[in-house]
Image (cartoon, rainbow, N blue to C red; front, side, top):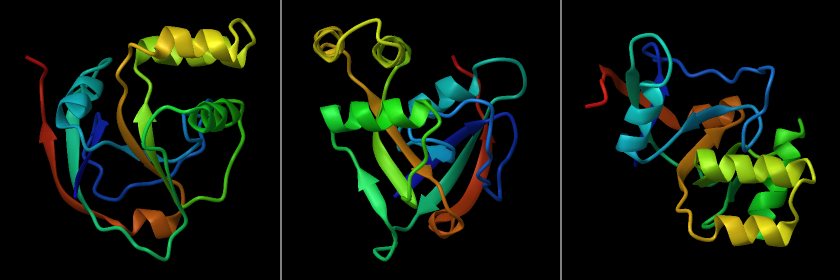
Length: 153
């Protein structure tokens, strides 16, 4: 499977970095199978937009968590990770909340809306794909192919 990582530089050797804020699936190296999504993300902010292309070869010996759709379990997992929680998975894959759904998740996380209100607001939103790598063993499943400079048209 081909995966893409949006950046401002070529990333031949992916890394897992602990940052100030956690993301949907905690700290990790994030990719997507959606090229258009990667192009949009690469074009955010200043700098040269680069989409890094990887071949992903799954390893059945790794601990992988997959969410096929937005569910209560997905929402609870994201809420815990965004609060700084960590997990034991090598790889996590599932829907990525767009900016609107991201705001709904934060509203839920801070108790500004209930779970029922979240699902009412999110039901007409269509998330995109993300897969995150959280261990060195997980990163070994990625094989760098190339980095492409890509400008949104």
